[in-house]
Length: 275
Length: 363
Image (spheres, rainbow over the protein chains, first blue to last red):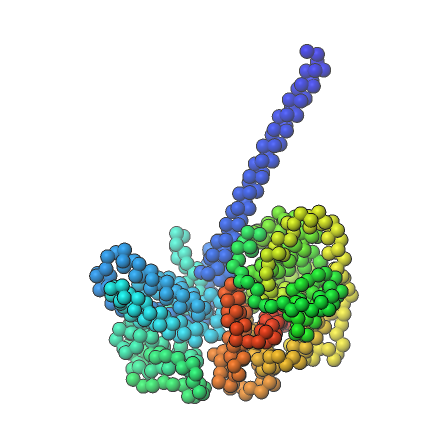
């Protein structure tokens, strides 16, 4: 073989190797780009899904810099709901039936809350903790929360009828509402973090919910919340009651209903009956 | 386009009216064929506003046209408007932007390779668009720090405002996005792309600043109009607001209440105060206005206002399918002309009230 042919062969081989390397690199880049785009699409989908649980800005800050000290002082309304006598019901039902009954309850209550711009923070056993005005500003949070509570009561009654028709034990709920300030932000550990509203307001709502076991009323609201309500809500003043962790007795009102067609629902003619 | 195309979207809520003369006029003035104008045929101030705003959208005074396009894409995405996003995508594809770049912007907005100046402009656009929390002096300061001149800042806000208006007009009416989403991928569009790029560049205009005459500033939301002085939008907005206030389809009180409610939801004191002033001028007393704004209802409201007021609140932040379902209920309770005007009024109120939030920083 002549040196010219040899040189040509070597050049061709080198060219083929180079082409191979370039082709592989190109394929690798394409694969990487594909993975990057897929990861970005996943991120976008996650962002969309998470917007139901935390404000967009918080999600973006988490994506941009990690979940570090994101908190903001806010005025929000807290709703606490709990099943009356759940322990006894739980003991009577098979585990699978109990889970089915509970899921049906959570589903109905969630709809009633989210339809009225509430945000469910967490399910605690059979309890529900929800906020109004913690995710986005809501100047009408008191009305929204009280309407949600009434819708929960209605949904619960319908669900109780369904359960009874199936031969299952029906149950009722107690709801406590309070409005006040607190801190909205990301709280938790490295392993489990959630967007929550924390502070005294949450504790008061929980205590007021517990009062539904002692006082005649399944939806109880504090005075701070009652003051912000549409006068067409029918309220019943209940005796101020001491609750754990609060020195002064807490004045509470039972919400009996809402008069959609009230003739003159001005603040001065608010319908408040005495217990 | 995966994510935008996945957004749940109802069937169109508006019945188009065939008015060939209107379509010809729109084509003559905007330089392009846009059949969406048919949805608002019959409401003269809305027809005029849609045509004028379509022209203003392509008219730049100080801001870079490419940056304005990016703002349109980002605001439409932020407001989940499938229709407007598809229009912006088709427009940018027509101008030569690759599908890969558009997808990259759509999916990686937070990490996309923008220049610091572009990033500052887009961050500001999103702050105004969301207004949750409302923009602050620091947002405008960030623009100044990147060399934006006062007229550029006003124009940036104006571009956001115009897109907010179109986003709501299209989303509340559920304009069908399908044809627009499919358009850039049609073989004949791809074939004619160079010609389309020439045509699209042809409808763009750059004009000198246009000052308002002293008699053009007064009227509803004068502070916002004044902030935009120098831009064509200032005159368009003044004309649209005056036309809206002269319309007798919805009552002036109903329209003013829409502005007051949107202003309150956005936490914009200027917008709420101006809306409140207009409601008072339309005949409600102070305690009555307080009551309506506190509870979104009152026995003094007429049946149409009882529908309009709570609906206005829902147009501020929403998910498309949710607001479209609500829109369908509202549509059933109102006449066609009332519903059409309500969509336009809530769209303009959302844009104006958000712009009102930056007036004191831009002025």
